[in-house]
Length: 102
Image 1 (spheres, one colour):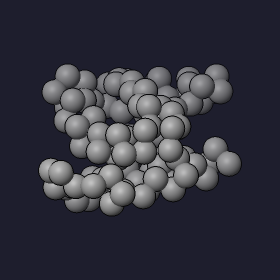
Image 2 (image 1 turned 90 degrees about the horizontal axis):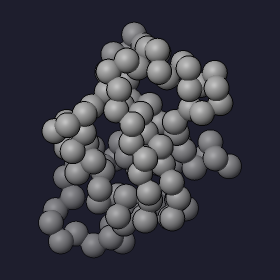
Image 3 (image 1 turned 90 degrees about the vertical axis):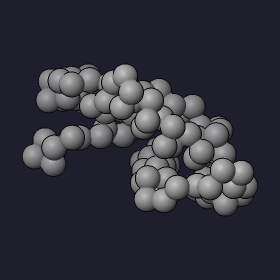
Image 4 (image 1 turned 30 degrees about the horizontal axis):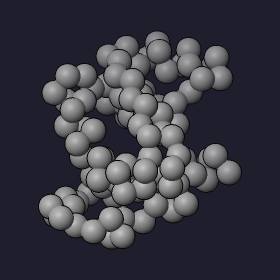
């Protein structure tokens, strides 16, 4: 179930990046895919202003679906992510800045 939920959240987050939700848009325009009230952990390469822009981009989806975001920014993804995966503490979503990291 967690995997299905994670995939639905990924689809929703990607959809949030592919268009801009106009100011004043109704929350019912955003499909939550049953993720209402859940928590989402994201590890990404951004910090500072980049992190703020990322959070602002996905905030409409998070707010509409009442999703709590736990974001961790790191520039050392090649070390941190494998360590988390091996320790069974992987994030729900990892944003890789380079496709070669897969």
